[in-house]
Length: 481
Image 1 (cartoon, rainbow, N blue to C red):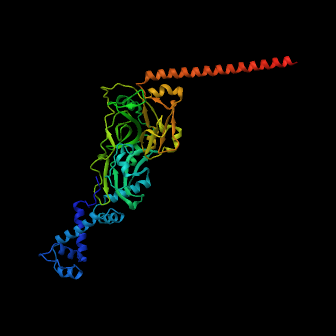
Image 2: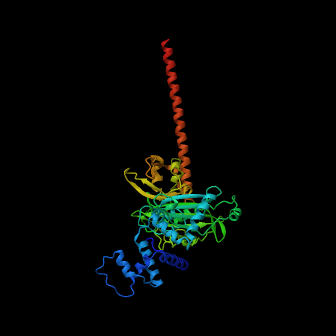
Image 3: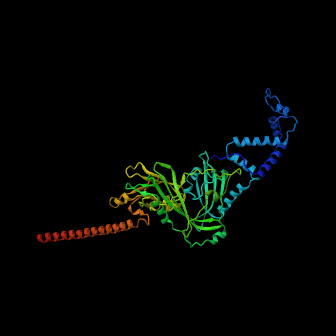
C-alpha cells in the first residue's frame, strides 16, 4: 500500500490548523480574493477578463466572504499543495512544522530514539525498506516491518535493537524510514516497540540463568515435515524439492511486564521452482522449555507514524514469508527419512562475512561450476548466522564422500572464494538418527583402524626395504675387499 501524503490528524489538530489559517487569512487578503473568486455571492462573467490584479480587485472589492468559505478555500489551497508536491525534504519540513504543535507523538519517538541510543547499547541494521518488508522474519523475528511499501528505490530503513549484558538482544526496538543516505533531516517515519526495558527489569535478570537449547525440537520438526532422497535432495510432504534451513536466537523478551529468557527457532524453506516465496514457522520457548505464545507483530509495535503524524502502520503485510505449522506434533502421512545438516557460518573460512546484515548464500553446482544449485537468504543477526543450519539428505553425499573426498562449495555475498563443506562438516539430526549414528561411528572407528593398520604396514615395509638395502650394500663392500 502506498504511503498517503494527505494530512491526517485528530480533531484538536484540525481546530488548531483552522485557527492558524484564520490568522494567516486575516493578515494577507490573498485568501479573501481567492475565496471570493471561487465562491462568488452572485454569478459573474469572467470570460473577457485576463485576470490581472486590477480585475481581481474589481471582482473582490471590499466584500467579505463568510469565515467558513474562507477557511475552506485556504484548506483547499493547502490540500492542493500537499496532493501535488512530491514528498521532498522541503515538503516534509513544511508539513512537520505545521503538525508539530498538534501532534507531538512523532517528534517524541525521534527524541526517544536519540536519547536511548546515547544512553544504552543498540545493534543497528541499515537496509532498503523493500528488504525489511519482504524478509522481516530474517531480521527481527517475530516483528514485521512497521512501514508501508514505497514505489521509490531510494527509501531505506534503520532498525535499532537494544542489547544488554554485552550483545544479548531485547525486544525494545525502534525503526525509522528515511530517504537516500541516512541523516536526521531525511527521516520520513518512525516506529517504537511496545516493550521498554527499565532499570528494574535489568536488575531482575539473573545472568547465570541460561537459555533453553531447542535444537532437538527443531530437528524433530525438520524430520517430521521433510525427508531426503537418494539424489541428495530434500523434499516436503508434497514431494517437492525444497531448500531448507533453520536458525535460532536468544532474547531477553519483555512480555506482559515480565522478562522472559526467550529462545526463538525459525525453520524456513523455498520450493525449487518457487524461489520468490519462503515457507516458515517460528517457535518460542522460555528457559524451562515451555512454549511461549508471542502476540502478532501489530501488537508488539506500540505505534508507527509518518512525519505528518498520520499512521505509518501497513494495512497489509508484504513479507515473502508464508507461515506453516512445522512446529507441531502432527506426523500423519509422513515417512521419516532423517536429514543431515551443516553450519556454513561456523566454518573458519566464514569469519570475515559473519556480521549484522542480510546475506545471500549460494551453493555451487557439483557438475557445472558456472551455475548454483540454490540461492538462499540468510539471517541478518550475526549470532543467528553462526548457528544457521542448511539441511541435506546425505544418503548419497555421505555414502561416498569419505572415499572420494566430495565437497559442497558455498559462496556468500558473491564472494570470490567459496568455502568448502566436507565430510567432517556434516552432522546428523539427533534422536531419530541414533541407529544410523551408531553404525556411522562404528564405520568411522573401523576406517580409522584400517588406516592405522595400513600406515603401520607401510612403516614396517619401509624398514624392511631399508634393512635389505643396507644388507646388499654390506655384501657388495665385503665382496670388493
